[in-house]
Image 1 (cartoon, rainbow, N blue to C red):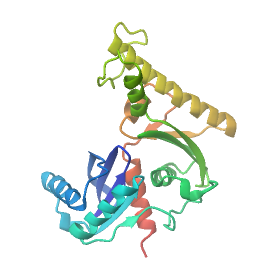
Image 2 (cartoon, rainbow, N blue to C red):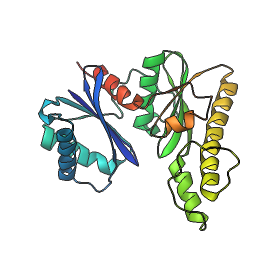
Image 3 (cartoon, rainbow, N blue to C red):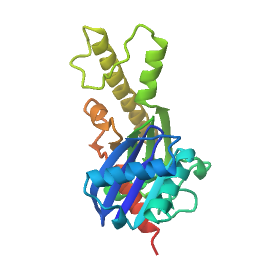
Length: 256
């Protein structure tokens, strides 16, 4: 079994693969100060709750954009799984040329998404990842990473709204709006966030296509991808497991 770990700023997504099949996945909160032993306790609890045996894990691959957490994750792999994990970073074999001014600046998750998208569609593609930041990454028809866009994520935008507009309530408002013309404060915030963000996504995709003078496949991933995609016709596909799939592909490309 392969354990794939995508450690983001807000959430960590975990997946277990048997061959090419994803048989189990979890989404947990990223804790910057978590220790190796805390990771061990949490992971053993997740495995036990889903009738999975940690000793069956033979390989681990990790992508991480939170350096302090990477040390604890690596420590967990060595102490509890007795495995040296493969870390996505400079020097790893991705099979994808990276045309960026400084390739080391590109987040590991962005490269992983790009690899998975090209493997799935084999065409020029924009990958939209709704994470702590929302990223747009362009992959050419030759499988080259060509760059992209980074925007404040939905949650970051909401947090700024809650902090700076003191009379607005701090509530969970992530549902499909009933109407653009809302009749109460919460519904107004809901419509503004969902439709406003859908408009941002559509605008960036439209400008990208105009600049490249071509049509492109657009695939979205991340926890809020289904909600925004439902209001954004510019998104062609939603794949909530795109990053995990990319980790599996990169792991296979690095085996002797």
